Image (cartoon, rainbow, N blue to C red; front, side, top):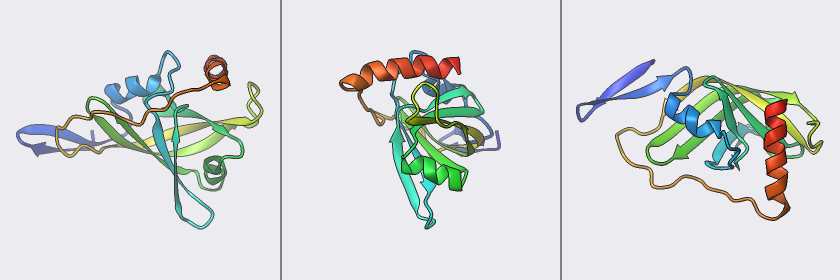
Length: 162
């Protein structure tokens, strides 16, 4: 733990070098669910911030995240140019963290579906974005529709074989 502060008699963590177990378990997504979705922030070619939600992001270890990204998505192009990335996770009942890291493309094209790439993110810092003990009622949720449901199930299985 790199820092904590007192808030109403309760010590709150501020920054860590890896995911705490609560955030790790939420992002681990053992059953291949899309939620909670996360917002990935990158910088475009004009140094302008760019954000996009992703349901495919999951934690491999407390220091490593992996995400499936369409090969023609702006986020992938931005990460190839500038490996710095920030990711926001908001999940009930009380997780709100920002993760700073470095991204690298590990498969492009991805053999499961050549339209996609696999990106891994090495975590450098995890910041607690809840300045006080409050509850989170909902996070960012997405749903799979139509053919995407079966594609995602196959994707999840392939992602854990690679």
